[in-house]
Image 1 (tube, rainbow, N blue to C red):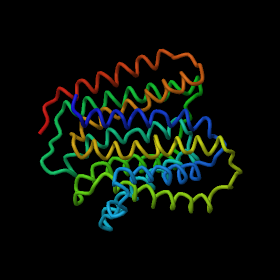
Image 2 (cartoon, rainbow, N blue to C red):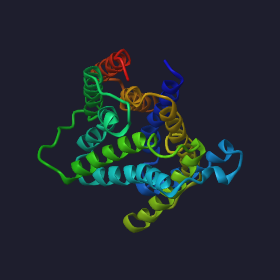
Image 3 (cartoon, rainbow, N blue to C red):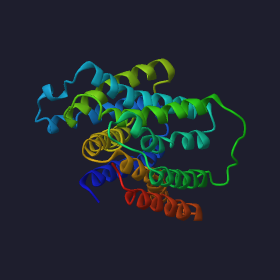
Image 4 (cartoon, rainbow, N blue to C red):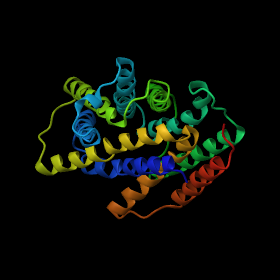
Length: 283
């Protein structure tokens, strides 16, 4: 396992805590939660840059790409979850790791797609589907088309293309992710002011939001950027299917829920896909 793989896994582990924190903060509107979390997360750039705000500065196209990724992804996902059955919308959104694998040759020069990468990505998505649908606790899937599915698909496209796109723009320090998070946080708060009511927050809420910002809505983005700068995006995309699995495990541990057979099956498919993909020769 490479250093980039370890950095990606660290980001995935932090993202896995998002569901558990979200349960504790379920009374806080999602855009407000995202805006505050991203603003807290942006402060991680200060020690990374030695306190120099100059390290946050990037060309306008690079900043636009960062805001497109962090703000666009969350806004589209929350809109999808509000307008479509959340179980299916979440599943559609988890096409983004598959998108990273499939789109890499189209976006990154010198990267080729082999049958092993596609097969491994499909296996990983199948595992994620088993885990996500298993979290429905017997809830029936709702049939028919919902416009929210298109929003969820767009959110998946945004995150996969943002992740790959960071390899196409001029090189920038990982500390500059702080500017992506800060601008995205402000935009999320503006969207909250238009779309959501503002509740009163307690001290406990504030501490949990700080943890959210330092972890899944902050630290994870810096680790993700560092991983993408150093590693193969196809391998990193395959590892990303671990996110719904680990998220389910964290929720089960924190709430005392029993694990179902679907989690074990999903784990086998996800890990099997990751192993298969890692053994596929890359270019």
